[in-house]
Length: 543
Image 1 (cartoon, rainbow, N blue to C red):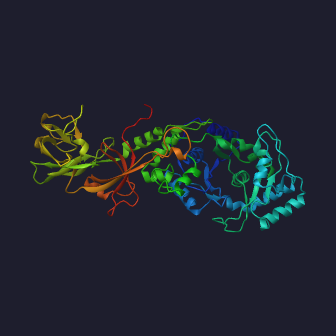
Image 2: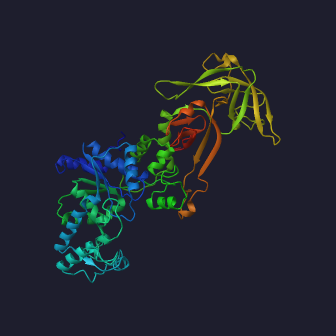
Image 3: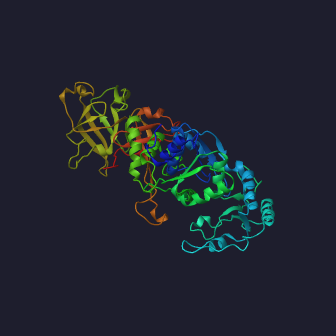
């Protein structure tokens, strides 16, 4: 398993606390809200949360922050589990914020008894209007000094469903003049009538994230609550909740820079918008930066982990080139993907001096430690790609031309004989002779040619569909909707693949020679011979 770059500041904190005895066992958690599918940004958090626990012999829990039932669904719960497993991690325990709703309610009631929380009748708009600004303090709520007894009664009535959604909230009583706006009497409970995916209609009030999260961590004995930088300003509230609810010293919140990648949507809200508006074919569309989308596209999970490790752990936000991710995907596939021959735009190639057929061997992967080969049938009737024959060749063209020669990968050198065209001048067939003594792996009769091209046998090839993708976002800045790439999916039908691909399994990955890396789609086989392009052959990262 890939490790994060050693010596990062989170590890420094953990090692110091272990050495001092402040922490006996490292316990972390990965806490997604089940309101969408995980994306590549979550992969970094997963690698950090699980990686820190594993490095120091600790535990990492999977905990769903399911405190907003209006946006959450069991579909998202299941997809999150599948993605974490696919990425290569195992959690210690599967937990839910909803496991603690009763305990959270009791904690809120205790805050009321301590005079540290009150029921407020302001609407959400009124709370925003009285919160103040970065340079001016907020205004106290007229209900801030309600008695403990009245607040307990009203809070109980909120729980019992006496009031409408938004009619009342429970707020922490901290400081309306605090320089940190998050500390200006934040809402910690709101009324929300929505059926919860686990608790049904038992509750009509739900804790806010800033109240629930530190309590969940404390209940579970989490030692290091690792989160992204946008929660840094919330850390004083995190500490206020755990201290005033009696968890001292309790968990420690540590923030790191989130993963940002150019031309990549890193917001579940915008990703859901694409799904809801039909701009993509669901959360698992291969164009999506979701982990399920990357799985469908054919990205190896090992490559994603390696990318996250290389991205490192920092305190300052930055934006990485998307080519960096593709570099790690390509590097993995170059070492592990089996080679295969496919022609995307086929034209018939007839070997005029060939009778019958014979087997030729093609190397599976030149980078493998142990060399293996697969056989392809060489016969009279073949296909080559239209781009590999030029009746009138452009400058520096090194493939088949009138009067020229070319080698077929793993097979023989061919000598051009003639070609035929249709009424529009399009080539329909090329005829060649093969040179019997030139079989690859043999003596080659001392012959050299400039070009080597892929080919397939027309008698046992398989028709395949190739899906190619562009980034969802155009480069640059501007409104999200204006930056959507038009025609970000292109489907090529009628491609011809060598016969062995008929037996491929879903998600099998191949390098189609001189074309790129491809993955067999979900449901591949039984007449559905379709591949998603993972990435091209050219690596531009760092150049």
